[in-house]
Length: 158
Image 1 (cartoon, helix red, strand yellow):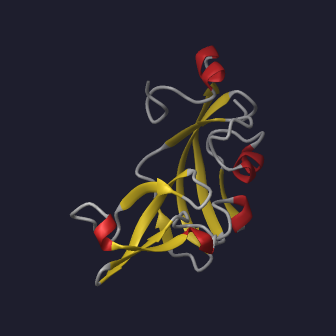
Image 2 (cartoon, helix red, strand yellow):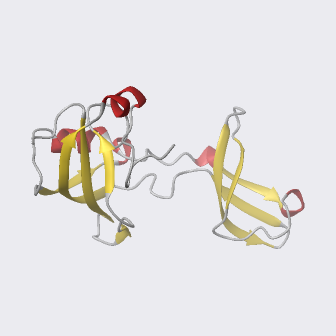
């Protein structure tokens, strides 16, 4: 079966930076609903359109096609006294950005009584290489199409 709109596509993937350093090896297969549902990057969907099970490729994505450019306004230094006890480097906190929208911030550094937070995705601003292998393609169910995502194993669970 060919990958086209309203197919459920199972991939194994690895993400590297431009220097081929592995950034994400994927904990297992990823399943997404193909056809513009926003379940994966548009350039990946474009590269896989019309392909079949067994297809392998490397897809280079510029920052604007992946996690976006870095936004330095999302980097903030906050007094440690404003955080709950146990805040640690590498942790994620949910707060509001400058426009008041809910946002996830990563704890980058703690120095003395200051905590440096970064609201950018860790891969923002990077050119990425996605090494993908299509391991399965099937017709999506009517419910998956209605919900806009794949259900079941390696997909979304309600």
